[in-house]
Amino acid sequence: MGYYDLFAPFYDGSVEQHYVAQRAAAIDSLAIEAGQTVLDLPCGTGLSFAGLRAAGAGKVVGVDFAQGMVKQAKKRVDEEGWSDVDVVQGDARTVSLGDLNLEQPVDRLLICLGLTCFPDWEAAFDNLWGLLAPGGRCSILDIHAEKRGFYGLVAIFAAQADVRRPVWRPLEDRSEDFSRVDVESTALHGGTLFVASGQKPA
Image (tube, rainbow, N blue to C red; front, side):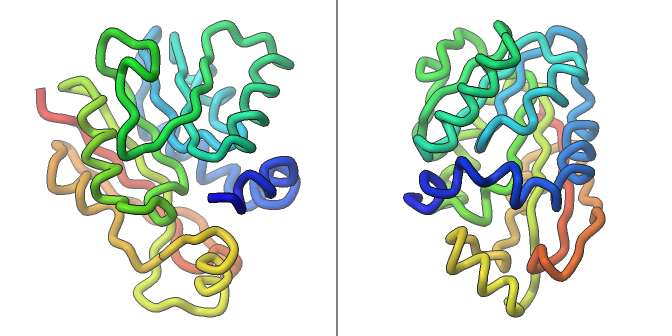
């Protein structure tokens, strides 16, 4: 994950422009209720924080494995003066409620552009699902392609991502009211962007 440490200072200006509307769609699919706690992992530089707060989140906890991303996310929080947003460095496969300084499971779980990159992504999802309260919702924004084209190969080289992974399936298998919707994509994405969402059984 050293790539993300190096790339973190440049991420917002170079990559995020290709995901603004799609990130907003993922946040909308969470159907956040006022005051709820949202886990945003991987949070990257914190680009979802403002949208989650605007949607009604009472507390946002952002987690990323890359220290460079965590540094940028904390800088964003400090500059905005957000007292309701915490940022933690952690591994999706092992992070716990204690690591997040939370006593109760989270109400909403947002996983943006992570499962195609995580090592042991299925174990990572299992752990994150365990942090979500019964009745809570999870939304995934990610990319899929049956075959890797040129930009899919670029993603593997640069971001250590495998766009062939069916990363929505663990959510589909475990959730109620599952939905998977393709969102606006271009060749630069290396596949089809989608938002998958579902509710954890109560």
